[in-house]
Amino acid sequence: MCFRAKPKCWNCDGEHMLLECKLPRNQGKISENKKIFMASSNQQQRSKPT
Image: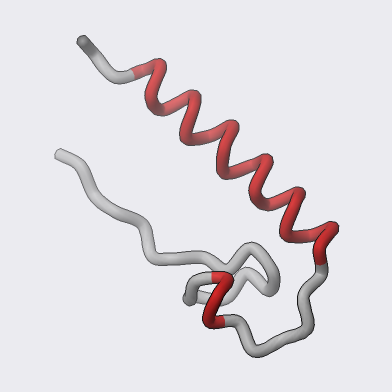
């Protein structure tokens, strides 16, 4: 079974998308959260059966 997680803002960790964030952008935090997201999504793709 596949489920979709709630959206997570890479800027403030809130339950909304980055584009909807009302806080000033913290580019360092955004970059770090993007790296974490990309690493986890790549790992999930590799573990899927073909």
